[in-house]
Image: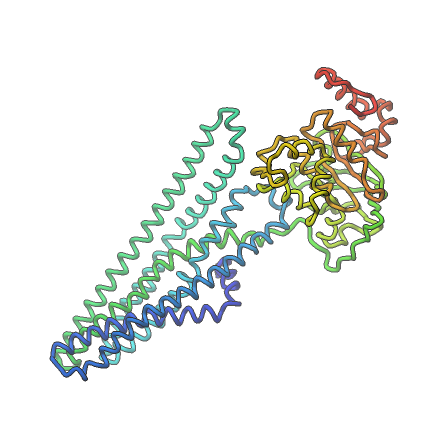
Length: 592
């Protein structure tokens, strides 16, 4: 069985009763159509003989009943089916998010955001055809074919056999041919739609840079090419949808003609009442309403299964970090946490060298440590390992003596207040972005933390204050303002260990010094781990660890390292010379 189909059927199990009811209502709808056509034909034929009205009363009532019943059954069937679709698709959307969220960032390194968006939105929307147009029509067709064959067979067995042969061609052979032909176009449509979505997202995200470099034309060409690919795939798909519908209509007319021919023969031979001739002919024709839905069901099944395969393939990805089978209780952070890192080694998949090689750290409650070094030295990797975004296998990380891997992932992360790079701001208000750090914070807390990161004057200049929207990714703010807003959000958290990755990136030296001064007023039990390549304000740190190629090159205080003649002193000298060129006075103690 197709894996996507198996997953979809598994999702329907809790709704088996509702699906069965939808099937019965669908069969009743088509059955009412057959009854309406057959009864109407019988009434017209019988009325031509001018009988008494009493002899026609039952047929008259039948026409009215079947006409009303068809509309009622169709309405109820659509209500049941659409309610089922909405519930299942809503559940699937939640499942997709819950599946993707543990995969980030380790298992989504190579994923394109536009492709993930297409899976979460477009592909899931495609599944709405499964329950209404794929699962129910075959069952309805079987029931209708059986009922119609019994009715025709009651007049003559050859009528039933003729009908079943043509119904089988329309309901089995035609959909089978359509499905085998449609498999490649369905997958092409799904891939082309995802490719276009991914290209649109990439282009929109990079539009400022594309404009700055006058590079819009190549990306516009890629968009047009992706759009052409999707248009061509959809054109083939539309042709496949129209051709089977025409073939199904032709088979329905052939069935009606064959039934009429056999009926005329039987009537002439005196083996069937002539009044029933129109009834059996129109009954056979009306029954093909159920068969006509099957080629469309076959087409939809390929589109649905292609989308389902892309969606449920996410379930095959395993998170880089798994919760332990028997997690230990998290340590009490009220009096602070003692973080110890011993002989930590980690290598990213596909890399030839370790990002961290034998790293050691001792961070007692209230202690302040800075991790410095050039790019790709392993600084940010340490933060990701502490937050359980990647899994380490060599070495150990303990909190109050408890191994970090022994804790439940969410419990471990709650012990840290972290600001990673690049920070993410959401397209909502300043208030809502800040409240992510500590929901329920009062107005005074929000304004106070903004003052602490030197955003008080900016807030005062905004007519709507905290209700000001920041734009997509903070587009309405400068890079430095975005950085400080993300820092303010982190500072609102009350975690025992504060992990800041490049907290003063994009800031000018004066603002940077003021922001770093605000970090000295931490609670006595809260420890600070600051990751930075800017050697500013580090004289207030209890220890500085210098990383190079994943290994500890030096460690000590600012006063010691700035005179040791090693890597730290060299980096400090280069920074001071750069500031001299810019006209910024450099102070040897690391401040500005």
